[in-house]
Length: 482
Image (tube, rainbow, N blue to C red; front, side, top):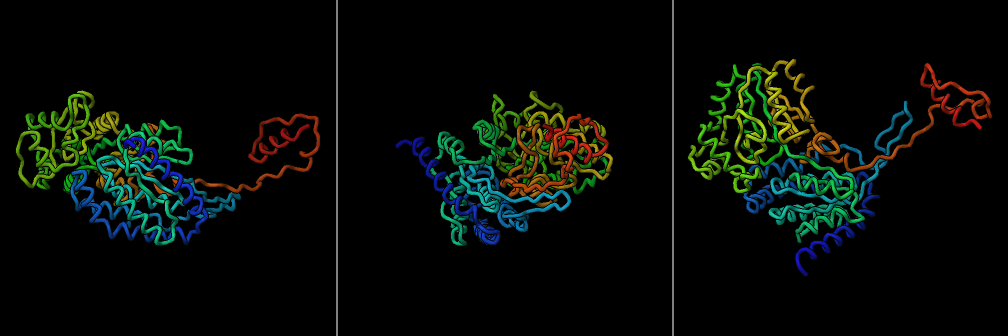
């Protein structure tokens, strides 16, 4: 049997097994669910370093230590963020509206995993799915198949030891487009949870199944004259360098308010930023992207000295990011697009209004609905950015890599960041366990029809009413007329 056929057959078997496991797990109590999730979170935490090293060895992206930290976030910290959430039985009651909400699991979830954050995303998705009483099957990126499978195995083993049924968590080993398509379109697959590049997300949305997909991030960072400049410099460089810029919410270009631009540049240089000249910037244009505009995977997730050497110039070994001064935004400037490596664009503008314009141009270039970062103390500027930007995460005075995924902000802890309708997604939320349950609602009568409304009437009751009760009564009367 060739790999494509083996992959298709594997997908079918995994879905069948997952569905049988889910039928059992869908009746689990809240105590059962929380015990299993606690065991998985602990197993993920204990394996964080090993899985991080595996991901680095297999993909060549980022830093093993940073991947370990992401695995800790994807396991223990994600679990802490959802631990108290009720996902079984009655989850909410509104006595005023007389509505009782009951959690209902979605079923079998097909989870697509990227090569840039394979192990942390697998840990995270397992926890939010099992917490919601769903089954989950992973389809890894081919270049991260082994580390994704091992992560799913760690979580499945922990879950089964804690009482979950076998087959609830599984991962494909025969990877092919045909197999992934078979997984997504199987009649027992209830929902697709897609994290990765635009082609992957488009494939998920084209199956006809419900899908949560995330678009690319092209995150602008505006630094206002009112900002804490030292903090901005420290955070921007640290965040961009973290795991060599493989998180989709990582900073892509700095937009510096001109009065503070020189000071910001000097402070960023002290933090390990190397400011390229025009020749070096042009060398990076030709290195980071192919002539057809596609990203050069040879430099994705690589340290700054490696990227510079690949481009053909040297930088100090302690360099953390390469900063490229730019003027244009859009098709004519490749470096104004998302760069999944340690290259950071640099623009200078006069005032926050111009900063708004350049930010929007960047977002329109490739990052609709995703994330904007802002460093400012002026609340007027902060609110203006919040009102105007077509994104659903506007991070104020914090790092993109950690803030967007909910580690340094109050956002839901997540490694799947929705980009909303403008970004081609169904939601702009940080995806978490509540997105993986359906909610049934018991709705009791609030407006009882008057006795006379139940009798045959001849006259017509006007639709206009001065109160809600009068309007409802009018509708009821009309419905009950004979």
